[in-house]
Length: 529
Image 1 (cartoon, helix red, strand yellow):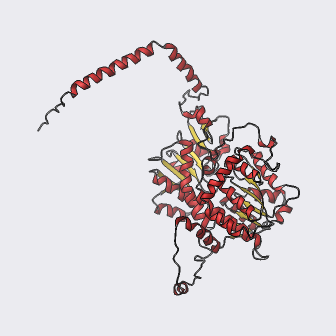
Image 2 (cartoon, one colour):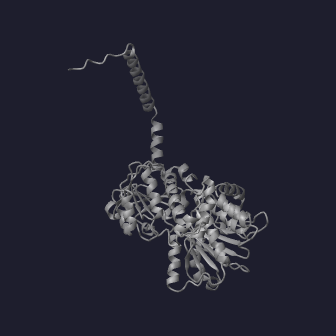
Image 3 (tube, helix red, strand yellow):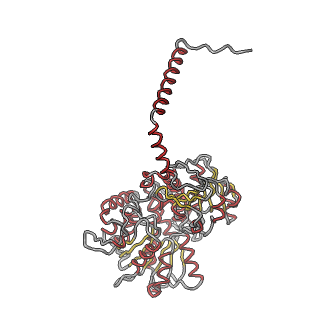
């Protein structure tokens, strides 16, 4: 049975006809204006020349925001509110003093100290456990006499840790473990407070090692403790200052890369001081590595690329705690996630979590995003980069910049184009471009920020590890690498529970006896991770 023609509502047909006439009149008027203004068209063509002054081999050039001056100067994608390019003069060439007349530091601009102090005060609000530890132990000064040389990311959160160590009696000298992660205003605030800090955002490789050396090499001051993130500081002291290294009372290391280096030294019989492996403590693995990366991976990618993840194909190299956090976040936004793994246990976990485990070569041509988080080197090689699709985003969530073979991209046939802070387009001769973030360095701390609360957990763990090593009686720790005692892990966790108004259940005497535990812990064996 045929349907009757739709009857127009009274008056609507006439209104539609009038609207069409008005639209046609506006269109003809616009076309007439354009045809009468050839100069405007010529001007537009001149503007286009600016877009094509770096033509590719095929002569094609996308009119992207990449050459926009506003995006190049934007600070929104940086971890610091102050851009690394705001002053062409190297901090090493400046003569700066703080309000007390001291020049024992090297930062971008000491005048930013007031702004940095506000950043630190904001961070303190969400680091209540570390502040609580500071207040509890401040009277005892458990680090009195400790001379700590540190190499970590210099952010508002690590500044709270540094000032806590100082409040507990330590003298500190500090450098950055990443050339892009320093918040310049925070470094200035530390320098103003009297901390000998040598770091700024955008250091060169030479600057990086110079800053480390300035921390270690000072007349009349010799470090007796090391707090490291990545192992570069430990390596430098071991190689350049062996006499200093032998007198170190303890090393605290928080990264996979740095811990790997320590175990290598220990295996070779060259580790002559005790070291604490904070990276494999439960409070680091389960919180900083997992929950921190679950939130910060998206922050870093969004700030730098503005990409929408729904339906995007992403390959995550490595399904450790960092990889698990990244995958959970990406899956929640609707991305199609693939995993590469060498460990069958982690690979099985990925399968059980609903991810497909593949070899990188199997998906490299089709994925939109490649993320490395293995702690290894040459995970993404030049061969992989050559086979990637146009506009593929490549980034690293591991500590070291060795996971992506960035060096192989610095060849004459490839063009590098900086499109905004920490974002480079690497352009192939045929016009294909790969979006490289932070030059293959740690994405979240180079391109965004990380959750303060999670960093409070890690910072508290580091502080307790330093106190433990510094005050341990002779013979407790030998020249080897140790895990943080579980009792200490549980203490760190308990300090953070009040933030959630959490209330622990207590074992009865009978229950504790049944489980073979002390009512007050530790509740897990030392091998538990």
